[in-house]
Length: 434
Ligand SMILES: Cc1ncc(COP(=O)(O)O)c(C=O)c1O
Image (cartoon, rainbow, N blue to C red; front, side, top):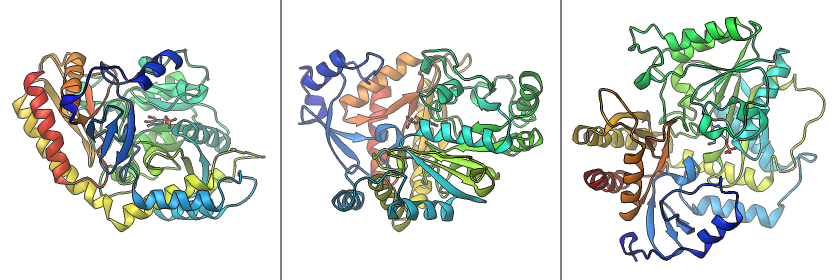
């Protein structure tokens, strides 16, 4: 059955979700989907409808649903030994740590494994505080870092924050959001005012000495906001001048997603002291990583422990994902297919005035929708309409941005130009009627 033939009968799974889960666990679509199966780039719902998955559960299914090589590694590991805790060494954990040392930039060497991006960011912030003896952290407005007390305090969206910041000493700098420049300036005449703002922020809102500046190389939940050339260099310079470390939150931007490089930060000509990641590394298996330089990691005192961190099954899955990315040269694929995708999105922008901005890198591409290209008034309703229309055409996409007016995509790293054509066709038809 095709997506257009789907019945409007409410799924029993969706009904139970609505009745028994916290209502805040919101689902996409007027008639939410219950997904039951995934294979490669496609997923099926419980009514038998097939969809091209262009969001991968938020850039998490990176090398295809049920990728045979990853599935095989998981099954083999479950059969062998499923759990050890970090109180014992296990081979997949040691091998993954070594592999991360080999593929991360600069002097990054030592890893701590957890279960999510939230924990990865928490670990990074704790490590930075412990290594520097300082306690203040600069983060970005429009950023997202998770749900714990610490990472929620760092989040730069009121929409994702049910409580005020619970952890003191986290201050938010202006985002390098050129399309909506917070200083109403234009690059490059702006002189990177957003980066300079970090110094003003440190001088006015902290003790003058910080533990770290933590930023996403591309602000993901914020709507794939790509900083301008030179931003990270200047931000790193200011950070180090005030005693801080540079933390790159690569939860969305790692594993080749941005094209050619393993990590998004590698595009920006700076060396981070800590990298965090999660999502795409496990292809759906829960995993979080915090990789630091020896100087930083060695200063983490006393004992630390994570029951499921370094779990051999997650580690085996992660190793298999990295192997697939290497063997199939998916970093290059993300750059090549990403460039084609970008060109097709720009064509859509020429056709539909509701598209105010096309941005992203590699296979991390987004469209910001506006009611008027001059005023740039956000158009979240247009996103909702395009969402419903693309779903009717059997294609799943994502959304984001502070105003809910950004369409985000996260096609698999092994997608082809055919995938892009299928997605563009659905978007084109949807914009035409939305
Ligand atoms: C950049 C970034 N950091 C951290 C997180 C938190 O990750 P998790 O949901 O795995 O806790 C996310 C989640 O979307 C993210 O996008």
